[in-house]
Length: 327
Image (cartoon, rainbow, N blue to C red):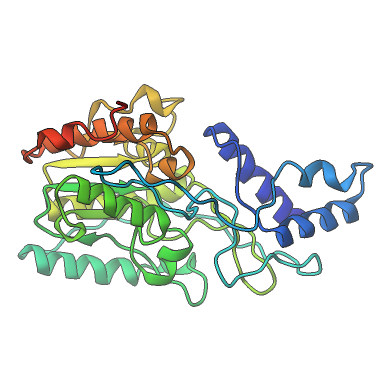
């Protein structure tokens, strides 16, 4: 339980640093935290830690955007929350967390075979799904995740890592943030299958789990993890050959621009950068909108996407230019 509490504390600190003020946690989870802290003692009242997290009977309802505008809202939390997935339960205090080895070797040289895009992508997919390091860091019953979408896409979105839903389905951005990303793509006048969506990481970064093997919460991938998977992302970029890359969130931006290249996302967001000889736009992760439901927040991301549309040569209607502007 000590390891689980430490992991939870680290995750809450990360969320706080990212500007998150509240998280949704079930009453059962809060009760389990209080019991665990009470057992640890150290003279700290059980409620001191537990009261930092506000219990809630469920995710809050999020208002839709005003009529005539695409909605960028969805009522569920995603990566970065500590809400257990539906059907899971908080680990009882009698279940000991199971830690996994985190040693990551240096990436191995990898060369794409000759052939057309479909053949090269098939070879890459076979290679990544069989990669010994990737497979070693995927828990039983879960999947290694590779990007999906059109191999002829003009725009390629890059996130940080798979979450709970993604490692089950083996596809990036299929959870709540992924559903929101799909709506954002639709607002750009595109379908999800007309763009390419990938992650820097090919597996869900591990945290301590209960004796039953359930992982609660997520953490950002570290430098070693991203460094190992980056050659596979570069291979996807080489195959798709998009006109524009879009980094979603601070971790993805750090992975592409370099760890420590900026302190706050605002330093690099909304400006053009370069990765793999491609123009790179940095914007917020869709989960930012899940936590910030103001038109101002939506407009910041939308302005970044308008720049992406212009760079990719997509038509922009006046209606689109006016999305999420306060009247």
